[in-house]
Image 1 (cartoon, rainbow, N blue to C red):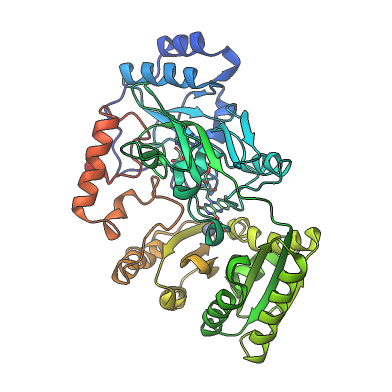
Image 2: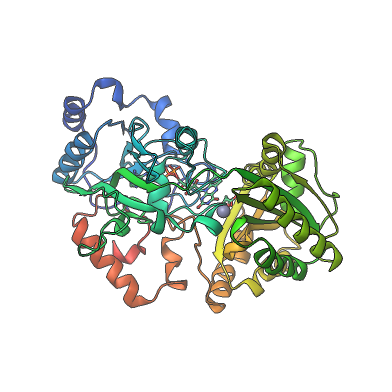
Length: 480
Ligand code: FAD
Ligand code: MLT
Ligand code: ZN
């Protein structure tokens, strides 16, 4: 753990937890769902990257919306700050307390309420783990419209609160399209029932969108209704080796032309990212080990013969044009999973180097890889272990990752604010899909105008006037 305390951040004027507060929580929840044991609290106070550590003295585990409502109403009355937590896989320090905020975990809100086979609409509680939902909807011939490497731990409520992107966004779009309804609890305990399962519903403001991506600062999401697409009958994956980023872009253009509606992922990794995952997890490497760039391309469709023909003719053309050097294709689930495992293991493999400086930017596609090269040059005389790039090239979303044996402020100063200034200069976004959390709240001005930030602060003040929900996160410090 590196950034354990935050000298520049001042604790807000919130109440501190007392026995009186605990007695109230134990009147709402059974004692076993009010966690105060110091050892048990550790896992909830530390984020996945082990970059941030809070000092909360209590974790509450409600099972129902009414319990969430009673807890929030009380916390609001008592001015106790609250940190909502789902699977705690967030990468921007949003899911752990900064000081001693009460942690409200959705881990036990894991009930699937309904799956409609005809409309494909899933309704469930916010604490359902994404991978469990995927398994559940498969039974009905459906799939979740989103997928990400953290699927085994992240909650659907966390996905909604971060507006998670992931590896299917290229095909199925953002959650703003597939989430049909949300039930959420406001800071004062009011339950906002917008749990519509309708595709069309223009009855005034689309309030559900306020909760999508607001990272627990406007309310706690308790239930969701999501449109699930039909499970594809045929899935194919190609893992390809390329020797220049120019060829990555040419291959992307060709893939869109040749694969059209069956293209479901177009994922990119450079050699540093690929070899990190291969070495740390001892995985078989599907391309030559010195391959500068690799692509994982997935197709999903309804007819295996048709899809395989399309994929073969795409690969033939890409090879003839000299875009790709080598590669492998897979259509059996176990081989497909093995190829995906490589891409999905990159994030975890980086932690093995020590400390990870993680950047998640959207950038016009022609500039996609430039920042990785610029950073490699800037950091060449430092203790940096890796400076690499991977991500969702199909969505213009680069993950620039830099690692060093331990947290080093001199390295950080070489990276920031340079990376944000460069992104802003290219009219990119400093947070494409991970959110702002605690880590990026003070750099949001690189991507949002002063007027837009003012409106965000006004919305926050309207919905949570005492500022009890996830303080120190999302909004710049001056706005709290
Ligand atoms: P948490 O980490 O617990 O919380 C995230 C934020 O949401 C916090 O601010 C928290 O306060 C708030 N929150 C959580 N639940 C609620 C709720 N019910 N109501 C209100 N607020 C709530 N992200 C992507 O976008 N794309 C990826 O491809 C991707 N891949 C990942 C791969 C790995 C290996 C890891 C570790 C992370 C990855 N992430 C990715 C980041 C992370 O998994 C997502 O942000 C995810 O959506 C977080 O879900 P969670 O349940 O873990 O939320
Ligand atoms: C990914 O695409 O792998 C995730 O967003 C996690 C990461 O950025 O490392
Ligand atoms: Zn990602």
